[in-house]
Image 1 (cartoon, rainbow, N blue to C red):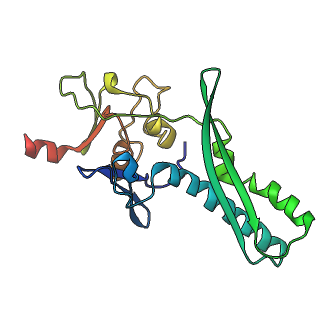
Image 2 (image 1 turned 90 degrees about the horizontal axis):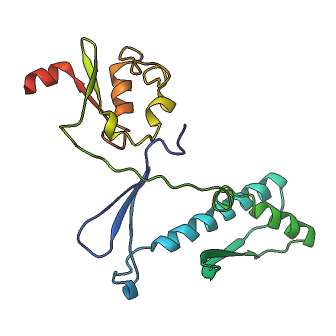
Length: 218
């Protein structure tokens, strides 16, 4: 498993309805709901963000293709919108994407760029097989704990808390190998690398500490 981003997109919300702070690799912005939904409309709403990703990905993909071909097409625009309808008890979402070429362009170029637009990465995601996995951190001091230690560090494993995100073994197999009975090799990587991986566990099933810190705390 290799995630798209080194660090996840992080969001948080406090008491102000319904403003969310979204943090990405180069800063942060506010997402909000329109006033009709109880928000203050001070940032894009979730549906706007969804359509914005498709809009920007389409434009970038078209620009890359046009530049690679050396075509003289200065301006492109894209409009996106969506609607939903219920058929046979199932909600169907339809996204419309309108391409606008604001420079002179041949019919042949239009046909090709229409095809290229459908190949943009976000289009492929939206029209592909999507699965959303949701994990929640649990802290249960009473849960059965198995300790894996060397002289310097300890990794605690709480099997009943595991939600099987598979991040540990797909990203650091030399340490976390479910094919082995003693599945955590505490000497398989540096302490820093093991800590980095354990910190990515979303469930609380894996915990890391330096032995000296534990002794001082006790």
